[in-house]
Image (cartoon, rainbow, N blue to C red; front, side):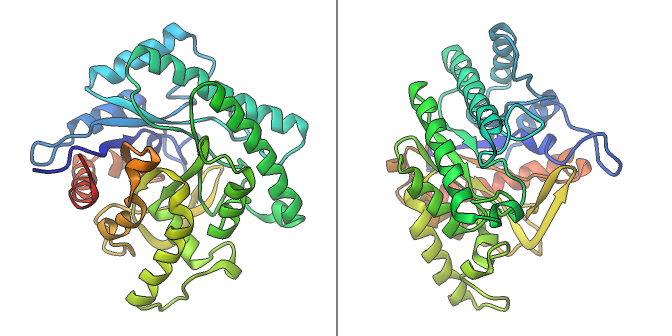
Length: 343
């Protein structure tokens, strides 16, 4: 019998990230359509259990009333899904602003965390949300400004995150900081660890590991001084480095994304270049998804992890609209659960 846990979630934000009205961009895919595509996926009688959800337009108005949010919760529940982790709208152009910015920017960042907590409360009380965290990052695109005074700027991020964690704790929520090479101060495994240890509130603020993004951590793409492998690495060198990285970050990991990466970076619209998400069966994929997942999921229940989520940002709309894409993703996630799940 296959393992009942962790629950298998699909992310809704691939219908939004990198999409828009600018030249060369594809239009966003609605929440309703993303839910339909997710609900249609099935492999051997197994379906997705839930979704992880981005709290911004066009899927969600962050200023929506409680009644409007309950209607969204009803829609999600009508597809047979629970809600898991939520993504707070912390970036400039949404509700928030840079976590290492001035007082005004910092206040916007913290307001975005409050928005995430308010919506989480509505979903929790509705009953549709049963698990998960609220995701944040530094909301500072790129590392150039951070490098002007790296120690001071990391200190600013740490202080902002501390205040954000206190807000979350007051609402009974946990925050997960997403490690990704495009976020200043979080752009390498070492800089990410410095932030987590600087905040020092593991019960409230932890790490969100994404297989695609953390692969770029190994290569030191935006921080060559922290590279753990070099191009042309052997399998033995890769897995030794992978164990080194995960041993440092796994104790902080409270949210986990299954993904694939081909070793390149990609950006679209206002989204700065970051680790490229690839289809689960991409022939150029660098990761053994099942084996790599095991390094992050070891002792996962002790860290409060109850679900895993697929993340495939900036896929072409034609790929997102193809039912085969979602069946392939679901199959990969089932294999991860069969290998590393629990009861």
